[in-house]
Length: 365
Ligand SMILES: [Zn+2]
Ligand SMILES: [Zn+2]
Image 1 (tube, rainbow, N blue to C red):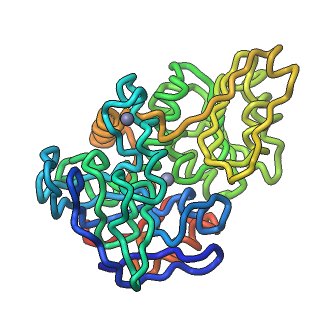
Image 2: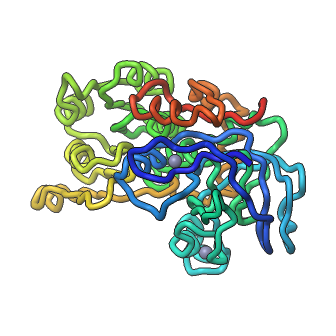
């Protein structure tokens, strides 16, 4: 099969023939139909975060089950599936306490399948997997716990977004922060995940949703997704603007960029007793800081959100139901589709901040 291989930081990805091993016990072979291009992928490409190389990136995808390893009965050949980048074991302390997104399996696999081996090879060399997904490819072998069957009527490009951007963004609001109706919410960073924080806040019944970004087209998009106000951080101080708009500080602020400076702004812009949520993944060695006395005296909270604190098998069907009901905007998120061969263009598009979400489209919807 063809796949985009990431060999070296700062070099373009190489789209080439890759050998894909057969699915082993508890694994599934998926033909990838559509896969998103996410900032987390870009972090590794740029060297902001490190992982074992070479690797096939891509962690937000949907496709069709094409093969089953021994013992798999949770899906059938032909099922349409969303790929999940946090496969869960079902029996560790995190899974059994209702937090499968924190399952120990994710911390064990680092570049491999759960059994410690790779299914990917190119030019006689073993390649690493990315979060047990590696979807910038025509096919992928993944753990059976890393696929969720969905209806055949869901377009693959939409289904792919449920693998990361939508689930993370909406989940940050409804699961991590549990924003109650009537709240005031600020969102720093209005890319693919940030816009889903905005629409998550709208669905949760927030009365003020203030979007912050430095790109005018993203501020415009945020208004369509439910922002009541926008602040261009290039020309205005977002902390002051949010404090003014909310009469002293927002109830909740979400940082969806992954930079210490904007996490600090999120903490600074919430009211006394307010909650700041770090959703963006910061680069290696980045330290997040809070102001000492006022953090305590104002009784603020800074908490992190991984994968929308989601119970994926429970949350993704609900997100699809919201989409079916016309309350979750997903079609509007996909602003460009590239074939796999043009993956480097798709990555450059993301890096420049053009459009909202780009996908690599392997098959017609
Ligand atoms: Zn992602
Ligand atoms: Zn587990």
